[in-house]
Length: 283
Ligand code: AMP
Ligand code: FE
Ligand code: FE
Ligand code: ZN
Image 1: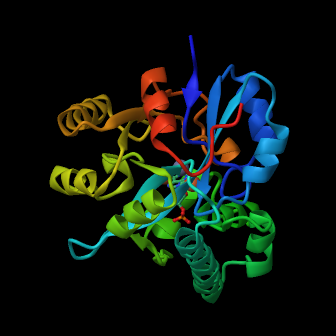
Image 2: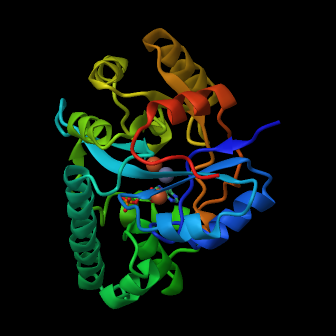
């Protein structure tokens, strides 16, 4: 059986394994195909490619921070972008902009916490991010170190990073993101589109409009979807002619999910690989 996991994070964003260790872990988990999809960066691509073990095919990608501005307040969402040309200027500039805003935002969150007497610092958080795309899990790490919460999950409670110390980041308009990914020869898949346990989700009508704009697939099998939500996404994809994916959204020890916990069917992967023109699948 071919095991395909199309959504994994490394230390290039908020995962805890380096890109090289992620490749080794993929091999260990018996994967045949693995995608590296760090938040708003291709910073892990080169190290992952260099460490790719024989027998493990590598899909280079990223998870783009987006928002749908069709309602007030706008709804944040994630778009998985696969096999795009990382040198395409427009998309590269978009990613650089989001990453720098992530820094501004994380520093602001740290300021808010410090103003309330929380003993963490921006250099400490920067140290955890180690040059990668900084995110709330890195601030969570500081809160754990300070003894204020025990787990990353606890740090996302509303009294901490969920609401009380939440600061929005500069996300891309989702329609512009779909267009930018396509212009860079990539394929766009909507990550965990029905994850109601994470917050508000977009209506089916929006997904229909995104499909018309060039969205290629929907991630149905994901730990943040209930069985009913998975079924719903599957049916919607079928109706709209979109590819269905499944993946772990592995983050190392920042989450409990294991590599390959959810997988993508070989036919779906082949459709994605055939549609992309930015960079090839490696291996
Ligand atoms: P950010 O991108 O900085 O807004 O932080 C969101 C990231 O934190 C997501 O990509 C997840 O990887 C992670 N995350 C979100 N909610 C949780 C949670 N409840 N527990 C652990 N990690 C979470
Ligand atoms: Fe993440
Ligand atoms: Fe996500
Ligand atoms: Zn993810």
